[in-house]
Image (cartoon, rainbow, N blue to C red; front, side):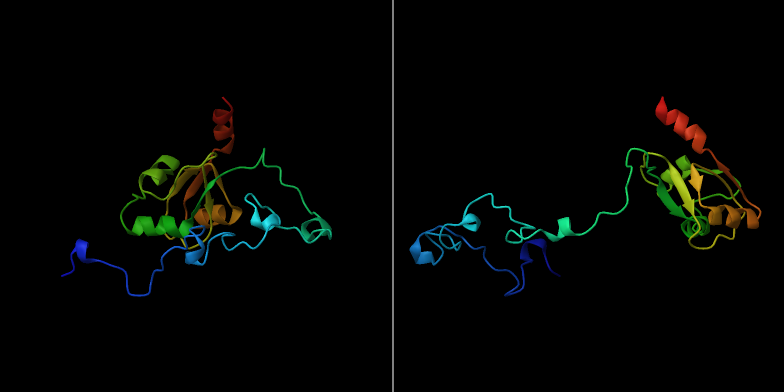
Length: 163
């Protein structure tokens, strides 16, 4: 059995770091492998995207679209298939209502600014009742098709966030 103090890297898997500026005998002294003078020999060089005076490609290409980040919603996305697997594993009781607190407690949902949104990826076969912030149309129809119900409280969540 291997002990922790006996573990070491395989031969040739690691190389020693390059120690530059340690004298001419090291082969990496004086100019420190940077050549003579010029912008790239100095510290703080930033010429990423510079194309020799030619108009850079990020300025030649047209800009499209607009993202208004002030009003975007940050939902934690949960698929119906993952809810069904949690039901099969016995983490969720189908008799009780499935809300965001329960989903966080069992580890399906994490922290998000605007709550939980259900998506229709995967199959759900258990009749369950949901109370979430948002859901896709396909998820709503899939839940209602098997006889479950879904209560979407996006307006309540928005009011509580603004207070």
